[in-house]
Amino acid sequence: MITSREEKMREVQEEIEQVEQKKKRKKFIKKLIKIITILIIIILILYLYIENISTHSIKVREQRIVDRNIPENFDSYKIVYFSDLYYDGKDKKDLDNLVKIINERKPDLILYSGDIIKGNISNKDKEYLISKLKELNAISGKYALTDNDDIKNMLLQSEFGTLDDSSELIYYGDGSPINLVGINSKEKNKEILNNTISGGFKIFILKDPDNAKKVRKKASIMLAGKSLNGEICLVPDYLCLYNVDGAKKYYRSFHNVSGVPLYISSGIGTNKFNFRFNSRPSIYFFRLSSGN
Image 1 (cartoon, rainbow, N blue to C red):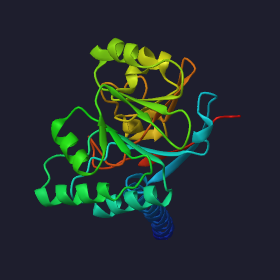
Image 2 (cartoon, rainbow, N blue to C red):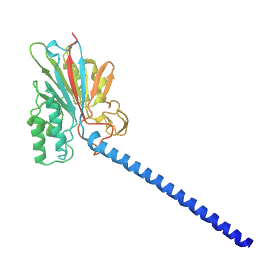
Image 3 (tube, rainbow, N blue to C red):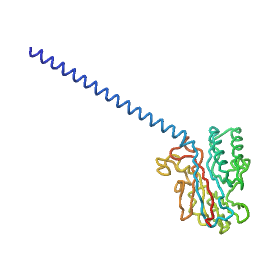
């Protein structure tokens, strides 16, 4: 009888333990399903962010430039600056959207620097790219900084004037001009600076933003691209995983270089990777003001 009673107690205890184990397994499975669901949602949100916003959605960075050297006839003058198109022939919608965004702002001057194609693209895609760049409109014209003959040829077909270690006076209405200065070669820094007129408002466009400190003395503002603002960053403008030669020190969207502002475009396309993170494609939209 005792043995039988003990056996029954054991059986009851085992049943209780089995029930408890089943409950624990169910709880664990529910938790696991919740965790997996949350991870899937996070991954989906990240994918949608990277695909639709971080890589393809163009941000317009508006900036008012106030400088006493800006002639009064250039008050409210509008400048669009963009860089590093890296067109691969695939993202035609991005290119169409870029042209629309720029033309909607009715700029007086359009400036560009950096590579315009990525890899090898067909002649048909090149013709499409040229036709879209040709659609860009600006009262004072379009200018690009480049030292590559193939890119220069495409830009000339797109009705861009090219800057290659050279300068250009821009006139607008009655009054003094502003000066564009393009710097490609570090070896020609002294020559370019010596040939740059003193006084007046001068926009320097740099191939390498890291060259900014050497040429800042005669510049009113400096513009550069190349860095894509880090391309993949844990925090926008900071903790970036990819910095290219020539843009290792200065790669963020804005730097004050010994009192001279340096604006760095994040570009439009992608370079090392086929996506961006916390470094959205962008253009700069400047409005000039003499401050008087």
